[in-house]
Length: 235
Image (cartoon, rainbow, N blue to C red; front, side, top):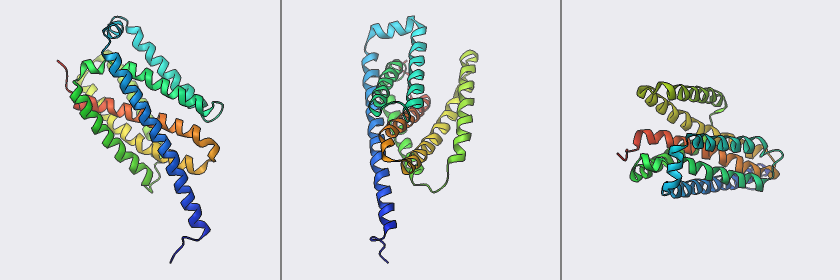
């Protein structure tokens, strides 16, 4: 039986096209942010003066981290309410650039070949989980709460391990980080899909930036934790 002329068919078809269109924008913004981060990281990694400054001024790393944290809070807290979509997008790319500057030292720690290999492993894993989050009929909402608490525990464990410097704990933290951000990738994708389908078009430009930020953070954190397993030292 052909339902193509029914109102329900048109509603579902329109909803699917709307969701697909917004998600394309989300992934385009996310990919562009990754390119910005990569280019800034590569450029900074070739600057002896910049790397020497980071090595001799420990507060600089903390400064970059605080700026990143501030930008995330500003974008996350205001994107869907007071902030314009254009300003949110600009701040998102500024955040990507600052994060790239903070990531520059990894090119000194790991070989370029292992970084590229890990990137593709991360991209494949991220892509698979994002596809799962989009197409699964299972409600991942309850897992979001568990993942949030697990993330808090991961942060606390990471801070504690800065002082204990336990290599065993570092491996455990890395493994847990991979699992947590794999789960968050699927959860964030499903959440974003649901938000697109339940909100009006006027919010979609802002929602695309907010969603791109969340998925960017999932990708970057997953990449960094995977790098601890697949990265080869420059030594």
